[in-house]
Every structure is written in structure tokens, then in C-alpha cells.
Image: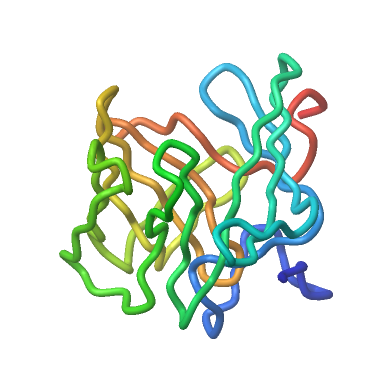
Length: 170
């Protein structure tokens, strides 16, 4: 699990850490014209694997659970549709690597580990950029070492980003 280190700025990651971290505490995420608050809730066993249950509570009150686990450096997400895992992030981060979701309807590709992203709060550098191709569009997801997900773009336009405080109070 990860928690921000004393003296660590919200905009700073940890260059020695992984791109995906099991974040403790609350993560505030703006998504287009709404937001959600994410936190690790508990652990849950599914198909004999133990997952960290992350709960996302959206501005409108909708609540979603994500089940994430790590195995030998690979990050997996449990997929209810298929009763199996999708790789969220492979252990070996290699530019150009491509994989599909468990339902085979979407895919991910590692574009770079030196991406940049400007949000209303930070100018990030040295980010992992994943291209995610779904039925409803193509998204670039940005991950920072030592923090994890920090934002998303579509066609170069920022549509999502993390916030250091509750979005309704920004």
C-alpha cells in the first residue's frame, strides 16, 4: 500500500517506485464534468486470489468496486463479465507492448515511459502513457511512479486528472 511520504509534494512521485501503487487514503479524480473519490476499502478473495477492493463513489452517488491484485509485478483487475483477470499493467514495462482485456473487446498499448501531462494542479514528467482502445473511444491514461493514475486525455485534450482536494471544494 502507498501513502504519500512526509515532505512529498502532491505533484511529485517517487522515481524508485512502480507506476501502479496500492494507494491508501482518498484519491480525488475529476472526470469530464463530474468526479469520483476512490479509496481502498478491504480485501476480497475471488477465484482463490486475494484482491484489494477499491471503491469509487461518484458525485451523483453511484458506487463502483474495482478488484485489483499484484502477482510477480503484474497488476491484474478482476472482470465480473468473464470471471477472470485483465492485465492492468504488465510486470515488464516495455514500450509498444499490447494486450487485450479478458472479454477481448478492448486493448491496451504502452506508448512511452517519458510522457508529460499538464493538469490544473501540476506539470508531470516521466509518466507511463497507456493507450486504451475501447468500443466508446481511444483514451491515453497517464501513470506516475509512486502515485499511480494521474490523468487521461482524448485526442490530446485533458478529460480527467487527480486533485489534491475534494473537487467540489476546488
